[in-house]
Length: 466
Image 1 (spheres, rainbow, N blue to C red):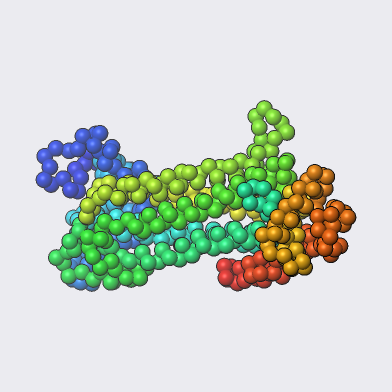
Image 2 (image 1 turned 120 degrees about the vertical axis):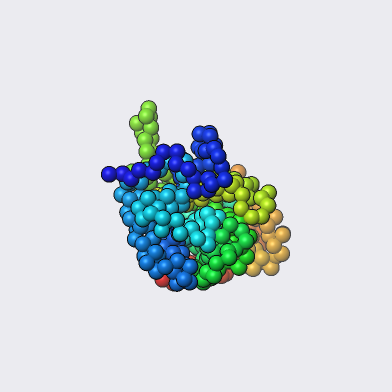
């Protein structure tokens, strides 16, 4: 049977009020519709707070145990969908306390000693977000593994590299995939930097601290924090940790969106670089031949929403005086939405990468258009004919124009045609501008030469997967 919190019950703060809030105000003020997911974190913090109060002789040990037992009962009720949520009680924190008092009586009223909802909310949000960000980091690691597995499989496959979405120079497919491994690696480094926020606000009370002889270090340690926030005003008004998490989600989505865009392009018949699994594609209601990359398109589309969440909370926070203002309740929905959407889309991208089929033959075929080895030709002139690069660039441009007019690739031009441009050109030039020679020559650190890429795959696995 579901518990009953009396309808239109007076709020816990209602002592100095003679009227209850209007229904409109009650609805506007309530956050229970979205913050109920903080219940585990709130109860965890409340249990440790009660234990600390007892250890400091602020309440009795027996009272602390009674509070803990009652909170565990509340947790089970919420977990089993037996809690009735009402806007009158505003948020999950008040619901939990009100239900605790119903279960254990007046002893439950002692739980809120030496704390405020201001530090209580900040603490629960930090605990919840900390655990969720661990899940995001694990998904990023799984995505990196999927990309590295594909890179290992395609270590010798050549594709066109692009600038301005125009064919530019040949690269290894593995090299291209490693670029995304690095992007998501930076996202993981941003996650690791969130540890600077792992400090407890609990005990800061409303804004000025508390009169009671509390032990903030005890509760911080039990809740997994690395220390305490040392200014009570800052502790209750800080939402930098939320902004940094929203920034992390935005960065992840920038990278997910770029990868999605490439998957969308590569899967089109004009490119035909990949075949997507049916599990991550949809059809058309009218065109039976269609296979649409909808998973990639949805991920690309949701990036706007996630970046919007980041901008929304930045805008809320920019004009708030110290300390707490109710505006800060607006942090929850962007935070919850961004984290859940990020996890969902990371899972979708992992699935797409694990099941995607690359078509190396088509990739290499596209390398035959766009004069991808023109830069190698210019470099050959510098090395073999002792030309400066600007003159060699101009000379190569003339040769490209001739090839374009004849409808030939650079390596298909005759030596006779090339000597008309410069009599010093030898047949060695034609060997130097093959796709394989071009790839193998990019031996500078970070370049696309196979030995480099093999080394980078090993280094990436060592750095990110262990």
